[in-house]
Length: 315
Image (cartoon, rainbow, N blue to C red; front, side):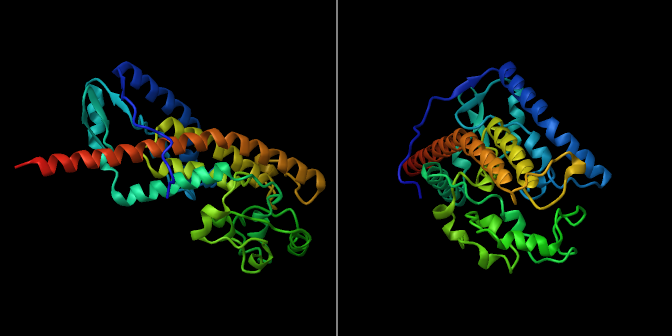
């Protein structure tokens, strides 16, 4: 749980109808550049092993990513704002329509507190840059071609050579949701053995997947998370996914992705350069997510207390 709250309740910001409609237009235009190609591929029955991951693994539909929500502490003015009342998380507030923090159920509030704590401890923990992206290699280690996840695409090495590369260097994967996809043969090779309950003890911002997961934490609390923040996290995750796959044992050159050859010293150096860049880019997003979460927790507790006082004061 969160040790302390960094944020405080703030005066709601009133947005005129023309202002929030423009914000929504900008968001939708930005996101369509990502969602339109994905939806077109789905209509054709095509798969993209790099970009479709963000819609398939994370289970946040393209249509949901396109949808704009203002986030907490914002009141939408004008008749058009009444459309938001179709979501149970909104209510009529002084001056217009706003998210209702009291609609955050206790179970989601507990989950939000866990997430805020995870974000804070990850931000404070020193990043590690020695994994060299071997998690994707461990996911295909000692598998037959039929077992490989992206078996529509070739591997850069024959199975025995790939296994030799994996066995020749230590694996230091700290991310549970990557580690759980390791093959049975690869798990004992990992220097760390993270479990789901231990996620806050292992998560660190040098990990590509920990930074990619900021997108997951952002959309997990939609519609309470501002859509612009969700889109910012998606943009980071999209860039990370490309590097993740370029450093993998797969050959995606036909898609325009030159491999980062982490099996070589130069490749390891290039991969670490990207790790450091993503670790730096992730920090402002991590802080924004934690701040939004803490504001929401404070507001929901306050709203619940206010509701309780009103209830007990009735004759």
